[in-house]
Every structure is written in C-alpha cells, then in structure tokens.
Length: 95
Length: 486
Image (cartoon, rainbow over all chains, first blue to last red; front, side, top):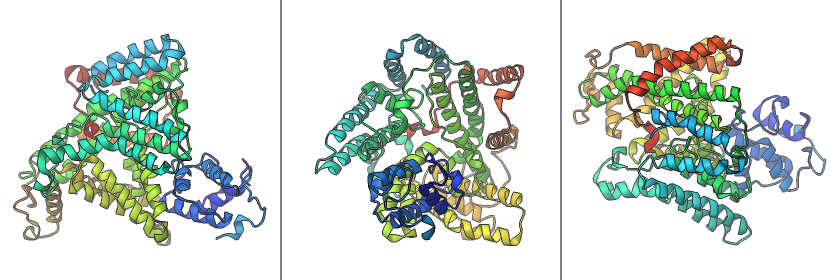
C-alpha cells in the first residue's frame, strides 16, 4: 500500500500523525495515539466519510488499519487501494 | 511446580531435545503431552477443568462456524462464552460465598487465602473466550486440530501465568516446524536467565520488607508503609516480568514466539502509557473483548462513553484479582486515572510548552509522578481489606494533617507520624531497584545490542548470571508466583 492511500490519510488525520507512519499493520498495540478516544473518533470519521454505520461487531473486528480496510471492503464501500467506491469527495473535506 | 523451579529448568533441555528429535508431524502431540504432564505437577483435580475449557472452545468454535447464519447465533455464542466462564465464576465467587458467607463481612469476606483456584484458570479461560469471540466475529477460522487448540489453551510455558495467547496468530504460533537455531537458543537462554534472576533474586529480595511491613501495620510507621509499598510495587513487577521472561524464553527454545507482556511500565509518563506497558496481553484482552464492545454500545454518550467503558473495564480488572471492595475501588481509581490522563494530556502539554519548561525535566517529573500514583493505588491490592487500605492512606495524610484528624483506632494500622524505621533498613535492595530502573532504561533506549557484544563478554556475563542464581535455586524452593491465585 502506498502512503497516498486514502484510508491511511484518514487514519493519519484522526491520530494526528504523518501518513507515512500508517500501514495496514498499524494497531493500538504499536500506535501510541490509537487509544480509546481515538478509536471512537476513527469510527465516527469513517462513518461520516463512507456514509455507513459501524456496529459493535464491526468495532470489535477493527484491531488494525488492515482489519478496518477489510470491514469497509465487506460493506462494499472501499476498493482495494482504499479509495471511496463512488470516487467522490476526499478525506480533506472532512473535519 | 512454578516455572522458576529448578526441576522445571532441569527438565527443559530434555523437552527441547525430544522436540527437535521428533518428526514435525508428532511435535504438537508431544508438546501437548508435556504440557499436561506439567500441569499435573499441580493438584490433579485442576486438569479436568483445563480439559473442559479446551473442549468447550474447540467444539464451540466448530459449532459457531456451522451455525453462523442461525437466528439464535448470538445466544449460542453467549452460551458458549458463559460455559467457559463457569469454573472461574464458581471458584472466584460461588465457592468462597458458600464457604465464608458473602453477607457476613463488610468487605465481601473474601481474601485470596480462601480460594483454592486452579492455577492459571483465568489465563486459559481468557484465551478460550478470546478464541470463541474471534471465531464468532469471523476474525479467525475455527481450528480443526484439537491438539493445536489444546496447546493454545494449555501450553506448558504460559498455562499458569500467561502471556495470554491470541487466536489471530494461533496457526503461526503452533506450526512447530522450526529447526534448532543457535542465535535463537541463545536469546531464549538469555531471557530465561534474566527471568530467573528477576524472580529468584530480585522479587524474593523485595518480598521481605514489604511482607514485614504489611504484617506489622500496627507497629510500623506511615513512612514505612509507603516504603514497604514501593518494595511491593517492584516485587510485583519483577515477579511477573521474571515469570513472563521464563515463559517467553521457554517457548522460544521450541520455536514459538509468545508476546512480551511488560514494556518498562515504571518508565511510563502517564497512566495511559502505564497500562499500555503493564501486563499488556491481559490489558489488550480486556481492551478488545470488554472495553471495545462497551465503548461501542455506549457511543451515544460521546466522550462519556469512553469514561463509562473504561471505568467498567478497570472494575472487572480489579475484581479479577479477587472479590472485594478494595479491588472495586482499585478498578474505579485506575479507570478514572486513565481517562483523566487522556483528557487532560493536550492541556498539560500546552501548559508545558507555554511555560517553556525543560522537556527532560518534565519527562522525569511525569515518570516519577506516574510511578508514585500507581504505587499508592497498589495499596488497594496489597492491603487485606478496603478498611485497612483507607487506614494506611489516612496515615499518609497524617504527615500533613494533625493525627487527631486521621486516626482510625479500629483499623489495626499505625497512623501516627514518626517512629522512624523499625522494619525497613536501607540496604542492598536499593541497588536492586537502581538495577531494575537502569535495565529498563537500557531496554527502552536499546542501548545494548547483545549480538554486537563480543562472544567472550557474553559468555562471561552469562556465567556471572548463572553463578548468581544457581545457589539460590539449589538452596531453596521458589516462592509461589503472586498471580497463580488469579
């Protein structure tokens, strides 16, 4: 995955870090800024950007950026490289 | 038999030899037999409980996968999880309730002395429940080989005290197809040796003064209560970290990578960082399977959701130690400390920046204050009741307030200031504390890379370590691990 990946940019914005420091392996275990409040902020941002609703089981599945990608793909809102399926809008428009 | 016992250490090379001599196909069954043989060194009645929970997890995982689309799927998963928790619930609550009378005491009447809890019960219960939840979430596929799940729950190095294994790397963890690898074996040897030194020399040295003070709370001074608690804080840390290192090293000898549970928690600069680095596999488990669903369910409350979920999670962590109001308060205080630390962090950082304070000084202030706060909170765990803990705290207040305002005649705790040090002498243990802090600093900043140290120096260091720990191990039996009872 490239750092230009939209999902990486979204996560970087939520965690207030450089997109280069985000990868699919990024998780609360290796990213100090991914704490409880950041988890909520990430969920709310993802819901807003992709116009979806994450339920409790989705939240439990999201233990890394890679698993967040898998959840979004399962919901049909994210293609392989992490862009919005409808290709409209950008992360920069949010927040 | 604790894994810090000389018999365990003596048997380990035999297991390693058998393991690497055996064909890859039979290694799992060999390790499982070794694991159950090891567990049988504890009372035989414990084994059926381990087997029962393993069987529930194994067949439960298969059933969950088969009935994923059932209307009663949630109920099924809930029932299986509840079944895994039955032994823990019985041993931690029902049996003590029946034997001591829950209502008879202001502090639930329960202390760990009353509980004949099977060794490691909560650790393998958490492993099994985590596995079932992950299968239900679709994060992992149900394991088809019962031997592998048996090892996942009951692997001899981790069954009694963790680290708690995670199902998402179960398949990789127990491939067991590795070859005997010298650098890996040396790393494992180093971990086991360091673990033994921490457990058998450091932890047992810190045990003395803390035990002495807490056995004589009525005649020791508040200052001694504080110093005794600091020794206890280091005792708990090196005891558990030593055990974890022995477990991780034992597993590494067999080509298995167990997660490290401790990442220099006493160098944490905040409560958030402390709980990220203290017994991480247990805290991660609670985060993923308790905090996240609670946090998600309470999302409508906004930031309050995290506070409610955090405090609830920490209360569960507290009562995991044992049923008692002291442990409930321990959970509440830690939950509030973590959320308070997180919510105030940006403001504190801004203030430091505005005042132009030295970053190094602020960092050390934060390390010191975090350690001090968590040591004070630990009194709730070490005291025999909430009342006794409150009496100890009021003794500390007596340093600043008149004794009349703080005295508590019924607590059996001396709250009067002064009296000097009768039970604690400042001796070589201070050097041991300095060594722990220095070791943590070296590990945190990666100041030493063993692979770059000349082999002669490495051998010399190992020889010194063995010479230091061998007489202790030969001369006396290992003290029971503090967390066996959990």
